[in-house]
Image (cartoon, rainbow, N blue to C red; front, side, top):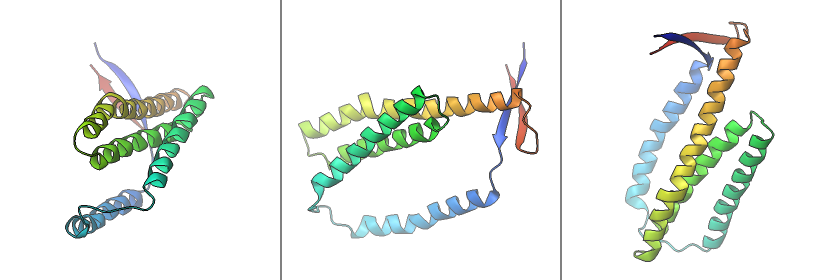
Amino acid sequence: MRSVLKIVRLRVPKWVAVVYCCLAVCLLPWIFYLSVTLPVHHLSGNWDVSWVGLDGGLALLLLLTGILAYLKSDWVVIASTATGSFLIVDAWFDITSARKGTEFREAVFLAIVVEIPLAIISYVLAHEIVLNNLKLAVNNNIPKKELSVEEVVIL
């Protein structure tokens, strides 16, 4: 049996896609340059501040996501997406900056067991909220000039 699900797609100006894709392409030479010029080892005078800042920002985003979810605010979409991104960045830097041995194994373990799964949950949360809100918009007959409606066949 087939049912039809209407999905609303918000209109995004075409220039947004062009600008962001161009910026990504422009970043490639810079990444290559860094990969061949940066030293393998570098001492940082602000190592502690960097980590405290990153983890402090992550703690604030986790708290903000929790509060906005409790308040049933649409802003939770942005907070949970930012939280997921911070978790991935945290896992990346934990692994790439860890010393060989136990420290490295702990970083990989935490990335696999905590950070990456929580990032995925955060992204899924944002996706589900957006999808549910779009379904509500269709069901509430928001004018078509504001939204573009597509029908998707569900098998």
